[in-house]
Image (cartoon, rainbow, N blue to C red; front, side):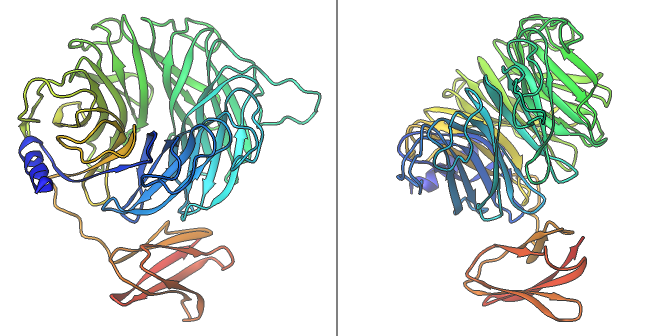
Length: 537
């Protein structure tokens, strides 16, 4: 009866329907920092945990905070979970789906060689990268750092099958007597307090090059992506004047600092964007028109390069750039006293999903779809999730708030394969309004929304991802069954592999030892039989 009441209240209050909400964690604390959709219509959550084996956490804690990864199906049920850590603090910040159907984990570690950590630390905190296969097994790991402190924020997959790491470093160049340069260590001198630090890895995790970029004060890299021209776009926060690599003075206390690199890591252009106070970029993406969308927070007035004024306090500030870095449009969005933007995703129809959270009271927002995003009182809770959808010119489509009596910090808002939306972050507090029960002090908290304006997409019974593939693909079985077989054939009908199935929705297929060509995977279960063609490059 309580569940029915919850869903009735949600339906009448919100622009979109809540399909389900889930809390994941142990009895102490978990902090979610990233989430991505998976090809099997599920999701994978990435963050850190200090809990032991309790709640719905299956592994004991190994040090202070450990990496914690939770793979869930489309209904929020558990596929598998993994915990990785050493004796120190291991903070998982970013996760991406890799070309072989696995995952790359990237974060910061203070751990020396211990437990799951295979290498000693270079300094106070280092980059720690872990490559997983599709089932969560460790394929390799790398520790990269200097003698000081490194802060990793973002990792992205590159067109050559490798990876680009974006973070910050206070370390100076590591001096040693060896003739051979060790790219696992810092190779360039520090510019100031904290610098942008970019490291390029090969497909097997070997460092290929690294770049230090900064001015004489504080420059913190928050987001990195590879661009369509093979280069890279970097975005972060800077309060440095003209100095070091920085070619423009800051406008206020701190500004958005955008740096465009070529494929070898050389600077091709840079932009400083800000108003008279403090402007803090959190994320950026390259848009489908080859421009860029920047997202962060601002308490600046309409001054300098900021043309949109704030409401009361700190607001979302979104800036659209063209391919050369010139401003096309900008918009601010005001919800509470302090609004923190954490996520931007572009949809297939060129609309954008903006995610974040609001501190202090939430004010009612107008929306052209729902007229008002809620029917609640003027003030509602503290630190609620904010989900905002905008058109490609910044015009609001709808806004929705989701929360409880406690504090919510949303880190990712994304569109799911079935056309809905996933809100993922950390929640501290008991149940009420949109939230069910809590497990510990802080939990991963995930909310699935259904877009009432969209028709639900029809699933293909059997798919393959990636396809074309090189050494590995996943066959996706998009229906429920109890048992069956997956069989790989060549076009002459010869059987090459046969795998027994027990209800799995993701079936890994190894292709490394077979020639390039076209193959057929047949899925035969107690609930049906289907096939999918696989192209091996």
